[in-house]
Amino acid sequence: MTSPFADLLAANRSYTEGFALGDLTGLAAKGLGVLTCIDSRIEPLSMLGLQPGDAKIVRNAGAQLTDDALRSLVVAAQRLSVRRIMVVAHTDCAMSPTEAAVRADVERLRSSAEMPAGTIVAGFFYDVKTGLLHPIDD
Image (cartoon, rainbow, N blue to C red):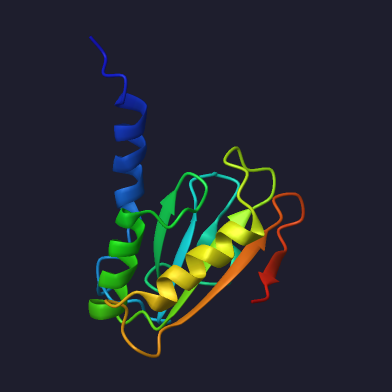
């Protein structure tokens, strides 16, 4: 019986032929953390002009600052060289995030007792039709 993942395992074997990320460290080379949605129309590295190894990316449905996402971003800031965090919601999202919700998540990150002092946090909306990132002023 063929595995339902056979196509993916074959693609992985092909991927390893040109694999060039083995020398990267676990640190965020650009000091950036990004919380964004699982929507595949969002390509966090490409949309920000980054390369693998530049940032720590946390994704969940709706780009929500759940307890798990908060923990991941705190670890990234404490141990993985993250000094700036972007909370990036997007248009046409099944979870329908609002600017108010993004602002609340930004404030929760900023006020977290575990977040290292001086960590810069900001909120954004990504337009899935144009690729443009819009800052949410707070």
